[in-house]
Amino acid sequence: MTPRTGPGRLRLRPLAVAASLFGLVRALVAADASALVFWQDNVTNTTSDGGRLSAWTVAVNAADEWRQPLALNDALYYGGEVAGDACLSYPRLDQLSAGPKLALVHKFGLGAYAPLLRLDAAVAGISARQSMRSGWTERMSLGWSRRFTEALQLGLGGEWVRTDTHASIFSTTSAGLAADATYDFTDVWRGKIHLGWRNGDVVSYYRAVWTYWGWQPAGYYGSSGGYDYGSGGRPVDTFDEPYLAYRLRAHTWSVGAALSPAIGPNTSLVFSCEFAQTENADSRYLNQVVSAGVAHRF
Amino acid sequence: MHLRPAHRAAAGLLAALLTLPALRAAGTVQVRCLDDKDKPVADAVTWLTPLDTTVTVTPPAEPAVIEQKGEEFHPYVTPIVVGTRVSFPNNDTVQHHVYSLSPAKHFEIPLYSGESKEAILFDKPGVVTLGCNIHDWMVAYLVVLASPYYAKSDATGSVTISNLPPGRYRLAVWHPRHPDELTREVTITGTEAAPQVITLKLKPDRRIRRAPDASGAGY
Image 1 (cartoon, chains in turn blue, yellow):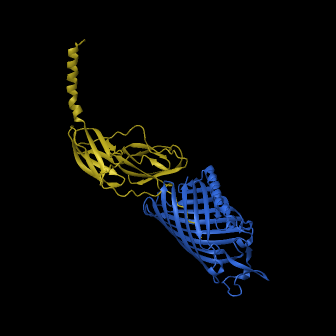
Image 2 (cartoon, helix red, strand yellow):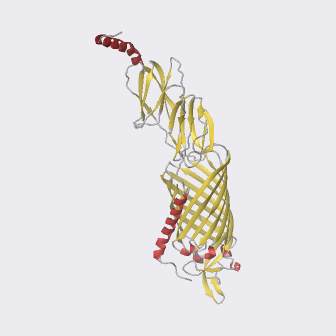
Image 3 (cartoon, helix red, strand yellow):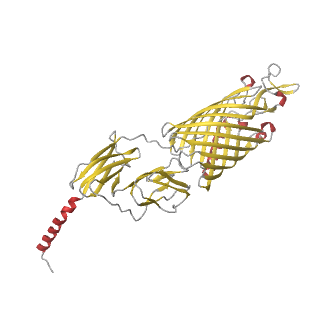
């Protein structure tokens, strides 16, 4: 296990990533960009006795898309998206992704209150600091949304995501459903609640110890921890100490809320929190994510 | 024929006396639009409809213009007379899809950039709410009037309508945040009258929010 990157680099790296992405966005005249700082209480996706670790991450995202009308109520959107995650706590989780995206949009009528159906497809290449995490991700989603008043908007959607990485243990497939409600209390303050369910692969990490038989999860002999160790964990040097990565099939329920004050016609701040519970027949763990950031439309 | 200076002055005075009644007959109405906190209300459309005679309106030869710039309509409120054509040039770098679902005029101009293909004719009185089918926050209002006597309040809430023949009129005021017309009867005598003060109890300015939000960093 190699030591972590120095603290000086920790401070500069996310700024450098954000600055270079912002420059790229400006060069491309991107339609939307956001930058978020978020805290996860359980970046290792494990139980408290399994070696749960919290982490701070900076996430930046920029997307641009162009519209091609197909019919009066149908349009094709095509564009691209660039995203970067800089994990302040565990820099080996850093990654950049970029790729094209495509969407078919159908509006059921005319006006702000007509329902909207949107089918999205996106592919992105992932370049991770740890090459075993690099690869490709494919995403498809179908979403329905409708504005009921100037203030209230509801959305329902389904999503399928597949990630293929150099190390098969990080290759995952999942599908999920989500519902959200957005309410604008005033022209400035927007509130949002979110409910989600997902089923598929998750990567969970468990603190490891070196034994005569190689790396084994700590407490393996005393406690099963609920993990399917038989699937074979992969030793990783992602964190401060040795961990084993496991791929599990599980389902996740999540609930979240966000508050977003507009600070300009095209800019808003976003504060959000999300709680998630992931479980399968053998294991169960919780995640909390708190984030703050800014979103801007160019 | 040559007139001596004294005769020319007398003729001029006579002409002035002959035209004075007509000038005095044309009246002016001044209106101040205030909210219930006595603050001036801009963009209030004020018009007068004669109660004792009928009036005809002549639409302008050139179309009125409502521009799309910065993903907003400009101006926000436009009063026009029945029969006016309106063009909707798109001076943005993105396409817009202008529409109205209002009973006074139902139309749409599918996604376009630059000049709209043709100006739209507004041939029925009423309020027409304009929107963009892509950018939900974009909104503007056309107030189509069957009277030539109208004006829109400025930033000070002031409205001046001139060249009104003497008589009784119905004074009406409309504002996007006061969609029910506020009316009263006024009489034009040709003499200067004190400004009409209209107090509008405005509804909250609720519009669809424009600023984006990022989805939180989900688990």
